[in-house]
Image 1 (cartoon, rainbow, N blue to C red):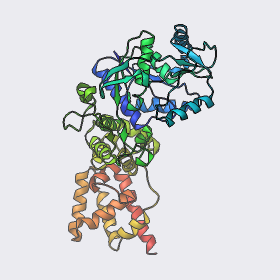
Image 2 (image 1 turned 30 degrees about the vertical axis):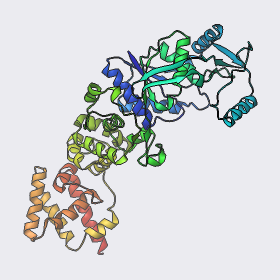
Image 3 (image 1 turned 180 degrees about the vertical axis):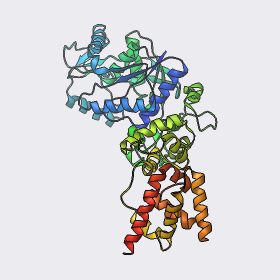
Length: 462
């Protein structure tokens, strides 16, 4: 048994495509079968290598590993021509040389007569030897199939067109190539967006014309924006890899995607193992799902707090590399992440929070410094330098004791010490627990930054 994901590399992998890939991958895993990746790149003008690379990189980032492929349709033209020639020789396809003008005139006339626009079969009996090649669609009967999501679907053959299967430039069309590929690759279940459902009856007739088994189908409803309109760039990031760039964990995005139109009771959080165990195509909702950026952000934050430290570090490293953070120049990263993860909304947040522990800064945030380094701050900072210099066992408990001692000796509140200390440590005042932050910054760096803060105050009063 096999399922497949068959994107067209005419753009980047978007959120809807990623969800389709996830559903097909889950079905394969649930049924202990193979997941096939096929790149449908017959559109030579619009297909790009950059799009292919983005698709492969996106699937790799999500962890949707494929068992077979990637196969490329552009490598299979000989096979498509073989099938087309067989259909022609059996009298189930024919050449058509109708001009664009004739086809347009025919279409306008049909619309004017309130008829469904379709080819009128003009060239069926002409025995031509050139032009486009059309499939001879049956005139009688119905095409019926069961869809895992839509239920029973039936359409009269009289509604269907003699579709073009080979263009005038010699390239095969989508409806032909997808049938040949799904047959040759032994795909048992075709899971795809419901924008393809109108093609399915035409494709079933092609399967039957070739005497091939027809696969099962599951047509997944589209994803809408929060306002109910078709998902577009104005609803947020669409390129899948932009979610990586914005600091989302792939596990969080997969969890969010699986809940877009599929459910298992009221459960919201699913591990990958749970998704595989519980996934059923029949539980996909027949109605379009609505994309909610806030819910995705909530889920991402939840995952950052709870995912294994190893996985969190693995994905954070990509962001740390982008910031040119050298992990040898600071605290042990796993311990630091455990400290910072609770207050981080995204991996970008988490990586930004790491900077102060590995890189020194050249200046304080001016607005924060003017607000925080007030009269009396200098003496407090000097006390910190004096007392912290004596600390041999550099840990948060001992640092906290020093802060408490200064508060007691000077008879001042914790904020009078903590606020200038925090700004001195971070440069911008954005640091968590001050004693823990100082522990991870390290003794030498902490004392150096306190001296830098004292110098700043001196410079303002000279």
